[in-house]
Length: 572
DNA sequence: TCGGTCACGTA
DNA sequence: CGTACGTGACCGAG
Image (tube, rainbow, N blue to C red):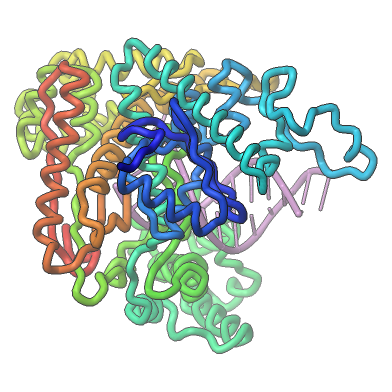
């Protein structure tokens, strides 16, 4: 009979030295696997036979696993939990350690710049990872544990200790009962981010190039050709000006464009597209400029260079971050989160595969109903379109109701019907009070915590030069930020829980390939695609049920629009 | 070379 | 005086 020092679901800290081996440390024992290949094989075996909750310092550890084809089921990511507990986007072992030990996380020791004279003058004990002041020794953090099983074991043991302390800190958030569960789903999202980095988003490059070409023409042959094409694009705008105004105009310089427009008889405060949109008919140069801007965006940001840099083997890859520094939404580079809709037809499932695309409907107002515990607003969420009952209750049109609710969550004060805002206050006082409380706290510089326990820092960095008006407007800005962060942050937590459970429920040949704040894209073989769609829908209800279990405040319904498609552009 | 501003795409 | 993000071009300060 096989014995293991670990139990299913037990927290087991894992430290990997890709060149040497790995160490796994649990409550009641440890295992050392030496030799890189043997270590990965043993980790895979442990994952399969035991299924612990792996604890790791940073995503560098799962990166090794995912690269080796190992997809752990459960984890505890110290970075992710640190960000949750202490706010902001910065993390790393030194900060996680400091945060777990009640030390200053903003001022952790760093390795001094390499210096010939100071190199030998290190007052730290090389065998001792903890400094006298209680911080992790930065030289240890960097690579002090490499190539030595014993030091690697120390490193894993320290991780396990941090995870215990983090668990205690989460449990101590008595008014945030969802915090421990959120730490687990935030960890899962961090692991998913590693997988998204690795897997990439299926893209049909030929189709993408065709779309790019439709905006800016064929791929330039060389730098000179590129210059020529650029000049030709510029000319399509400049031709609408009298010849004596054309020279020296740089369309890429907004100030320049502004004066250009003024000379054409058009006065604007700035040259943003939404402002120019209404002036299209005023002068042909405006229309030409807006078309130019669109092409310029493709040329500079989403053109051939973008494809060359970020696409390989039919996948568009970016760098995923499981939580931003504000409300904790996922972010991604390489344009994965801001790809123009025009390019979405190029996101095509591979042969024999399809996408399941699902997006949460009206997620933020539903989240507001849940986190505030407003029963009247919760009742509205029982409708597939929750703005309809809100409109009825306020006695306004659906459009007005929608704008008013969104405006309340964003802190918008202008352009809203005052009657609708007053109506919200009387119809949904609990939800509105929740928002104004958050705004009041934030505007006076107090940190907030989301429903899942994420600390939202308000760091009111005092500017000695700020005058009274500056201070007031900054306080108001903090208020809007805080008000929105409580909703956006809880929505991000809800979304990540959903994504994490979907990930756990999917068969191994189906993968989440995109997370877009309220939208999931899953890539799967066609013969199971309907099953995957069912999993995605059922998982949403499971996510909602888990929330209700932890909160038990209001019966909020969540809905998703789910469809099976071949191209990202097909749904919606 | 760097930070700030403008601009614009997504949610 | 509606939030968040990433990217790129330009500007001015250093």
